[in-house]
Image 1 (tube, rainbow, N blue to C red):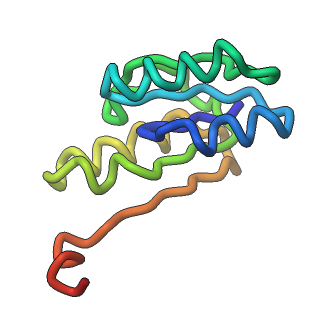
Image 2: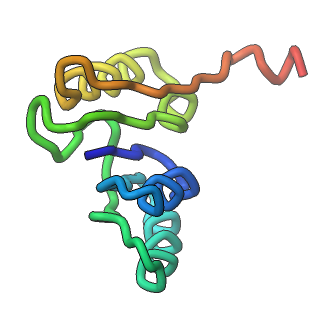
Length: 112
C-alpha cells in the first residue's frame, strides 16, 4: 500500500496504473474533488481519495509500504506541524518502508 499525502494525485494515478494500491489524502476539498473526478473515470482507480491531514493520518501502525509526502512539509509553516507529520509517517510506515519527502526552505523565494 502506498500513501500519497498532500498530493494532487499526479503521482497517485501513475502508481495505480503500475498496479499499486494507492490512497490519496489532501487537506483541501477542492483537490480531493478533482482527484475523485479523475478516479471515477480511471481504468486503474485509487484505493481511496479523501480529505485528511498529514499530522493525523487515518491509517494503522506499520501499514504502508511507501509514503509520498511531497507537499505537507512546505505547507505546514511551523516546525511542530512538520515534526508531527514526520512522526505520523514514521508510525504508519512498515519497517523498511520508503518515505519520499520534499521540502522548500523558507528562504527559497529570496534565492529564486
